[in-house]
Length: 122
Length: 245
Image (tube, rainbow over all chains, first blue to last red; front, side):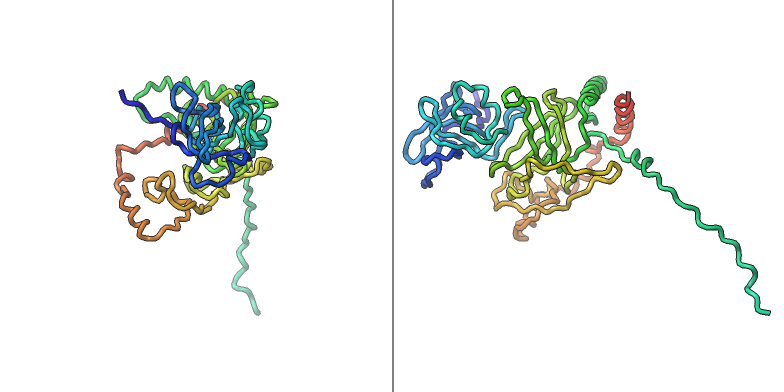
């Protein structure tokens, strides 16, 4: 069988960390890359958790925006945005300036703390 | 005795020309492009049934006349937003689809992050479409704004709607947009995109090389001709009659 085009966020995609945590904002000679997607298929969309490799460390993260167009009426961003997260779901940073899609409120139970630090919603 | 060269012929004063501005408004016709059926062998019954549904929806929600390049504010019903409605302001980059699946893409740059949303015109979740600024651009397709400097896509979210007169022509903004350095998502300098709204700062050799891909025979191709003037007239009459009821 031939697999179709695999888009959105998967292994080895370079991502942009969007919160104001120290890990995400200190410059490093390699961009943060995804190494695993916690999903049945290896493709991560908005609202999925992934494992990032940043500054030689492994860190979990939540996808908040993707370049690939999704269903109509959902926003499409110009860069793959990601928010760093701990194992229990608490965000590492304290503020998120970039806009976050309203879709994430669906999983209010898991990501309530991330939504609480977000400033703008789209 | 001195006399004039005969009595001067009586010249009546010139009649005043009355310009009735109200009559001129009816002359401007705009038919939304999604009403025009695409060329094909489908049964015209499908299009007429779709048009009925489109007109029904238009009676409930007033969809204003807008082109690519207008700045719109759309409020949609969102179960996950506080206040249940979410408002998005952006410039219309593209209008696509025919019939009930007609879409338009709005683009804006918020907090240095470019956001694009593809809205469906006839989606029942849309509560209001407001035109904030009337402005046609030189192209039908502004997808190159993704590769242009972000200042050309930023629009104030709290912009006030500009007032405009009904009978005036839609103004064309002849803005030449400056681009980010290459690589771009598409090779916009090539003639198949036919873009007039970019200020190309590329060297002349690159522009000449791009012209190698030009297809000058395309405009004379008769099989690609699709004359929609008669179809448009019929549909225009039909739509207007139904809307007035």
